[in-house]
Length: 477
Image: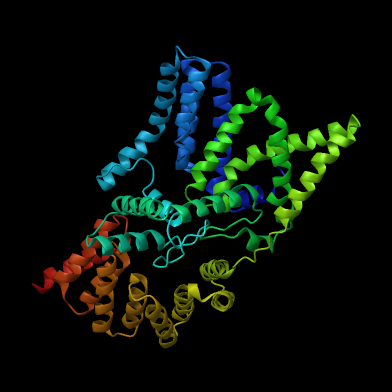
């Protein structure tokens, strides 16, 4: 595990999945202890840890059913008490966030509201078993949830909230399964192969292991292609002691199914790899043990199987797409003020894959904007807007250029359009208020600054501007 490159990668980028790995490992240990020494306290403490794990991975909630099975097997008479203890531990941890979600959304959202979106990503006519976004979604974490909500609202002809949108897409995923059962089964098979046998670490929308690998020798150590043949052998060999390790088998199976029913990417597989490494380690131990005992005929049989599996699994050759990574790199360079490097990264993103073109054009426009090359910035922002006319940010960016050029009326129209597309866009409200202030429309300016403070109570500039405009308005009257 110390030499497993994917663990090192997620630690390096401070990914929450590293915390999920730790919590699920600790929760499993607590559950093992509870099964060995069953009482109210041990199951309650185990429930607390699994509740914490749910924050990292909401899909592990079905493990409650697993605990029910364990309790029934272990202590039939006290099963109900153990189940209640376990569930109580989970509820104590989850309840505060569920209550907070209800206060904010006025809807029952247990942990997160995008489960339906993830279900649809993995179960729709365009799905490929990995993180292939539907055609109406921009492949970036900053836009995808809004894209799903907007499309659901368009189809239903309503203005759905995020939880309502999630439920809509879950129903759409179920509808796909009912109407295209054969395609669903084919997808299920592909996802199972990706999860258990694929060495490719499929990226999410925001980071690629293979891109970071270019810059770090630490990421060239053990990979899933090395572990997979050994854990498969280890699982078969350890099955003879099933009673001793049945909990690990059940958790591995339950977690795997909870991912496969959605879609498979590298970080979703991460928490279960620790259990697969246990089996792989047992496989390595068994090989050395058989060699020490000179059982070469028996050993040869498993070595041939392991060699065949190693060849088949490592034969997979997928060329990763770095366009998103160069886009992210361009954003980092921009934040650090390294504008030449930022431009170069955005251009590489455009060259590799045009699907991120709106974001790249917008990024290039930002570089021109900070360099006060307003005409060039306006040209790039318009190119981005042409590709994505319903993006509030691009309208806002164009408005800021007009504002700098003193074209108040044009800026006003763009800021208004940005707010139409995103009513909670605080900066658009603020700049619209500044335009009204420049045009001496003080009442309208005051209204916009109040909207900003309503959205973001800590917006200092809006509070200052509100006081300033309010004083000038009173003097004018």
